[in-house]
Length: 301
Image 1 (spheres, one colour):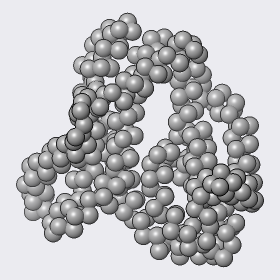
Image 2 (cartoon, one colour):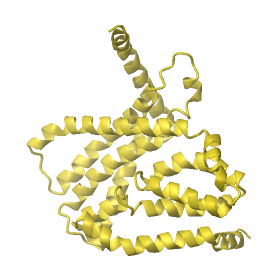
Image 3 (tube, rainbow, N blue to C red):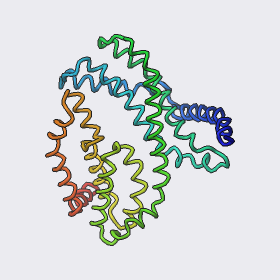
Image 4 (cartoon, rainbow, N blue to C red):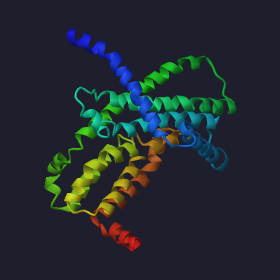
């Protein structure tokens, strides 16, 4: 009970600290910019315009009110993705704060998700205008929006805590070197092991968080093994790109299924030949590094 009382008394302090960190992040993000916070909705609105133009005029889809459909999806996804990207460095990127005695590092992911929530709410009116322009009309379901936003906040916060803690733990690359020590004498076996690791992570995480989390972990291992960083970078990006079409998360699969009005099973079956071809090409590059290094040296002059 004593611990509970102490935690309860700390809640107002943690809340005020999170608010101040959010204000700091907003000021730093748009410092010395001409339009300032207007950038918070310029990016999602630009995405909506481009996607609406492509999938209503160039490649028409069967989705009714597509502009409204895509504006809602883009805005929510931007909040979620940006929070995860920023959360990956929320603790490791604030070493001065974390090293201060008594500083609650657990508040840092909260400030990250809170910052992106503010940006989401600032861009929300633009989304409403797009929905109204596309023929959408508000109904009783609008009253559930605060609850939906709260659920989205908690979901994003939970995953952000996971991403932030993993990035702290796995920045200890010495442990990764020890884990992969049996492969260090054979660059080909080491690359196969790394590609399998990245492939497994890519099935459960989006491309951007995977790159931000695994790059600082794997790059020292690659250099210690004497592998060309450019060669590793090419295969690493190809592997992450394959993750975009790999179930169950597969961002591109979900997008195609939603835009085309198709079942996920049908999209997955149609994608399998291309995925196996990409796997085969990637492992050919693992077995024969010259496929990557020779053209890279040629382009580098």
